[in-house]
Image (cartoon, rainbow, N blue to C red; front, side):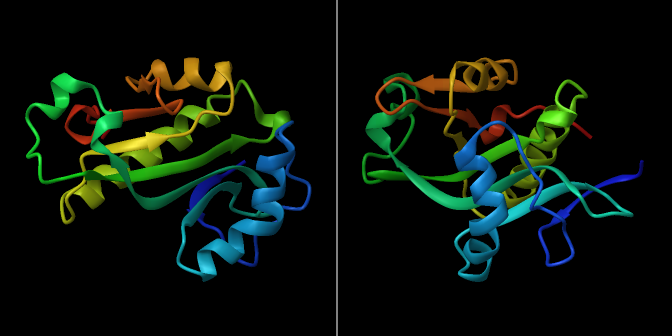
Amino acid sequence: MSLIIEKLNKNHQKSAFDCDNLLLNNYVQKQAKQDVNRDLSICYVLNDIKDKIVLGYYTLSGNSIDRNDFPPDLMQKMPPSYANLPTILLGRLAIDKTEKGKGFGEILLIDALKRCVDISETLGILAVIVEPVDGNAISFYQKYGFILIPSNNKMFILIKTIPDFT
């Protein structure tokens, strides 16, 4: 199997994708291409280069978050004129249930974080935000340094603290 991560396109086979979460399944099967066409997000898929079957995916989009959602000690360093702070939303990340336990979630997360760091070199970005769907997702993101925002159940990692995965 030769795997690649690339932008979702019409050649990808996504109809059989099943991660045991109906919302995440429906998103990649029915909504992701529309969001890409509307410039709302970019969807990256992990697939076999030969058969194009989607094994996993994630989405990235521009975002901002209310400064009051961040820890107060972090906000002491930020100018008060910024009511909302620039972030990138890693909106969805899912792996097909037949592929779980193979490290593909980590591969997709690292790929996403690398892209976010690259973007931050040409655009002001404070952090990457995720919206974990359950406790397992929270534990997964915490292993990589994401911090829970109790007021809205989102998590963040500061761009400057993302490890160099290269």
